[in-house]
Image (tube, rainbow over all chains, first blue to last red):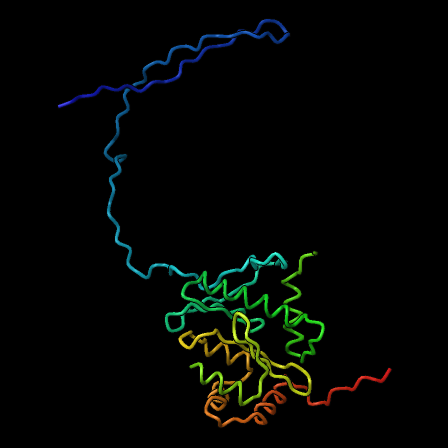
Length: 154
Length: 97
């Protein structure tokens, strides 16, 4: 059976003498650390680990909302993040931007967001095409897109 | 929603289509693009019916009618007109230069 001894040490202290008004570069040996009194714990101070069973629903692994921060396209830059609602439909992840009724979907949240980003780039190109003649609702969609997406200068 | 149902709606409404990374569909009325929707390529790909319905600006019964042929293109144009998606005023003609 192995035994081990230990002791608690306190740092030693020493006064640094003041030598006149001028700063003097001087070195001192640190005093040796000294042994402190062995601490004793009262029964009330002793804490024991108690297993805790958490009853209730765990937080969902998949968030209900995500923000799209980049379009993964060098031609476009997002002015601000796009808020997306995340839902599961027939084991497929669907992300929706309800403000313009646009969506993306995939097997995972990441795949759905990627699909959404690709769709959004395509939609931006279509709506901002010079020949586009849009109805009132698509004009509104175009305006919303313009608030979020900015083409990069070539 | 199945692919053939989506295509039935697109054909019935005589929507313009283009194959990109997805199959894009646009309804053009009197030269004005009024609604758009899309689906993924491939017959086995999932299609989020609720989101497609939202893009087409119809309620559930109207959407069911579009799929089942109860709602015609003319009916659909009237639905969009009633909802203000299509302007009831005729498009203003450009003045000749």
